[in-house]
Amino acid sequence: MRFEIKNASGVTNLAIEGELDAVSVSDLRPDLEKLVKGRPSLVEVDLSSLRMVDSSGVGALVSLYKRVRAQGGSVVIKGLRDQPLAIFRLLRLDRVMLNADGRTPPPAHKQSKSRH
Amino acid sequence: MQVVSAVGEAFNNIVLHGYAGRKEGSIDLRIQTRRSHIRIELRDWGSGFDPTGVPTPAFETLPESGLGLFIMQSFMEMAYRLGRPNLLTLSKRYVDRSSAARKSEGAT
Image (cartoon, rainbow over all chains, first blue to last red):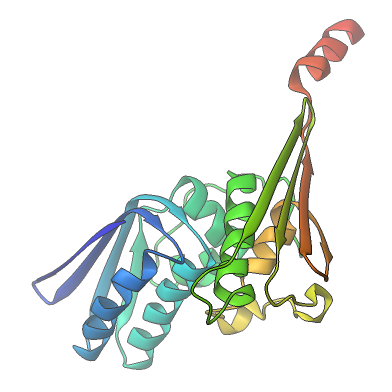
């Protein structure tokens, strides 16, 4: 997993590549902590190069989303596809995290099995 | 994709929770594949858990944890036996597309 955090024109950009899982998330957490403490007004999370995510990785992204919004900021998640998108949909995060800022998620793929 | 996600969650669950606080632990992983079926068994000698006691995540609260079991159970059939070792079985049936296609062709 590789990530990059940039600040430009009042927007904090976080790009994550590769696999964000229970092991790699520990590399990301300290920087997420710093990011949140900076009280950003807008965080754009680019997940277009994220290949796999697990529940721990999702937990870190949800935590970022909740904490930034609790401070009055907003978080835009973009570029989700393939396995990460399927996980977000399964956990019903697409309804909240992808639509909250007016971004429309890509057309739904059918889940072969999901709980409702 | 679903199998990889489910097995990854199962494996991490054992490492993070079953063997929490330990430097080492063993996981026995067995994979059985058939044309239309895959079955994966994970055995461990750590702390077990009761999957029936784990509530379905309250999605409206945007939970940050407790999602792994839900992912496992959503993507594959799951069975769990507490013991020495603990045994977690994940299985999934596939639609045999080639035979389904043959049947479809035969019907037309």
